[in-house]
Length: 118
Image (tube, rainbow, N blue to C red; front, side, top):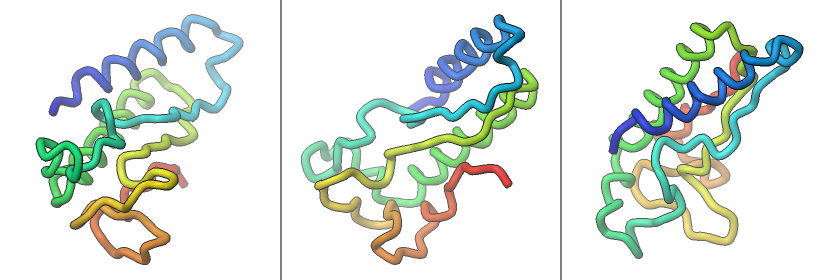
């Protein structure tokens, strides 16, 4: 785990957008904004990912999103939102433990990690 790679990628993207004054004010939506690779690799098939079924992974993902908003503020970017697939995938079983997302009607910590600013 480590936020460095994800945050560096975001920083490079913000640098690119800022390099074109005509695009600076456009809304930016970061798609597939997962703090590490293979968010779809469940602990059932990849036991080394079992940490994702506790409170650490949603907290880690929320920390990543928080730092991305700080980067966007520093660059004065119009960050409209982020999308993460860290918790649910089409036609795949839901993650066990705390890392669940509606429509499972979960009230887990991960269900508060929505990254759409008000």
